Image 1 (tube, rainbow, N blue to C red):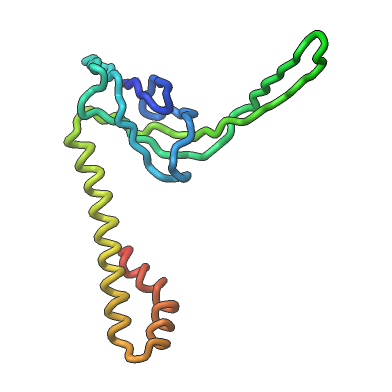
Image 2: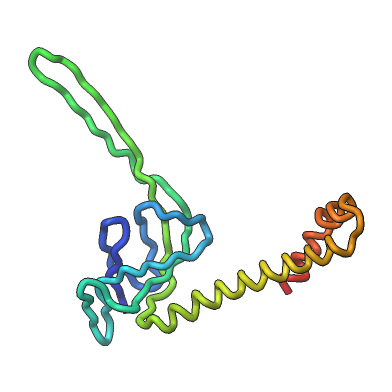
Length: 160
């Protein structure tokens, strides 16, 4: 199965496992990104969007933030001016690996909801535990001491 994805003003034909160099995305290495602008899905059944395929998405993992090769712009004015100017730059790119192509909105929403709920639960549990530590201790300094020294242990307990 393949999909045609639009990102950064360009279109890419992708399959699961492909590695792409796309225009810079606001994501760090190791994070998951999702492309929602799917122009076409192909495979057993071809679906062409008008302009986008409703409910389709492509998920990818960010590998790294990189720069492209240097692009040089050279200007030379001829005749009596005798001036030259050289400018260059390296475009910022994001290296991503496509993990899966999702056809239906239902699967996509459930995956996003699971990730959000998990992070919300962890934040709530950490907040409640820290609040209980603060209320148990009478002295503010003691509470700060507990907060500094027990945070790692609390996080270990929460991650289980």
